[in-house]
Image (cartoon, rainbow, N blue to C red; front, side, top):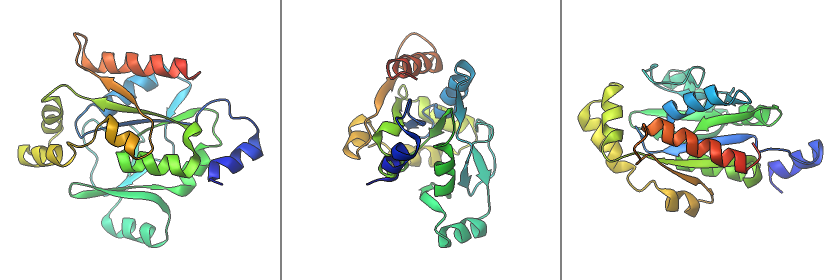
Length: 208
């Protein structure tokens, strides 16, 4: 029995999923989409627990999304087995604590998170599919590189990260047990507007 099964027994029937996750390759527009989603839906909130990251703040970060720590502190947390997941992101690492996920399950609002595919899969495994609404964001060709360079990434590093995550797509997500909805921004509207409309429509269908 997974953690989520016990929570159903403790709190009764779950009225709505507790997590909305956005996955996409680096530079796909995840942070922009999350900012607009939180503006449009006051009943949603950024994941309160934050993710711990071993880098400095950068332009485009969602307020309160990250706790910026040095490598030594991150290593101590790993040794203490505080994280549900940790993953490398280029030259830095990101991790999320189990305790923060547990706390979010007790909130009235659904938490919004930007996650890599492996983290989205671990979240589903930890709390159950019924607690997660997942989206995969597909940028227009070239948009991801442009965004990465705009936020300060060197072109060589941006191209490297783009190559390394090229296999991230809807089929890859579903092969990992994450039933994501697809968001394409290839329309006449500004990409963020198209993405937001898609997410809001799907959340409405799910009763959120």
